[in-house]
Image 1 (cartoon, rainbow, N blue to C red):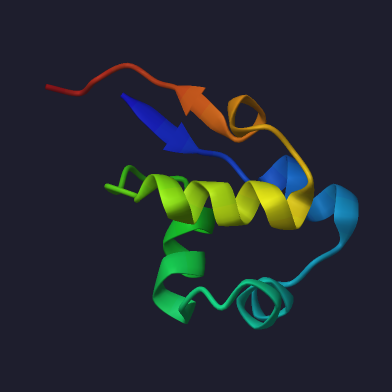
Image 2: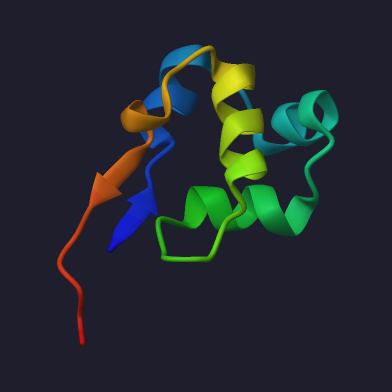
Length: 69
């Protein structure tokens, strides 16, 4: 299973969740989920939007974690 890890990117660039919401058009719920570190079913377009905002590659924000099942 993969999760999205934005903390490294966010803190290095000093953006708030509100900054990201305003710049990307993503909802408060989506941005909150992205920063939660939990598994959600994200659309590829959402991940592409975040990567475009942070000017990063998708491999930089996805982290493989053990499946708890």
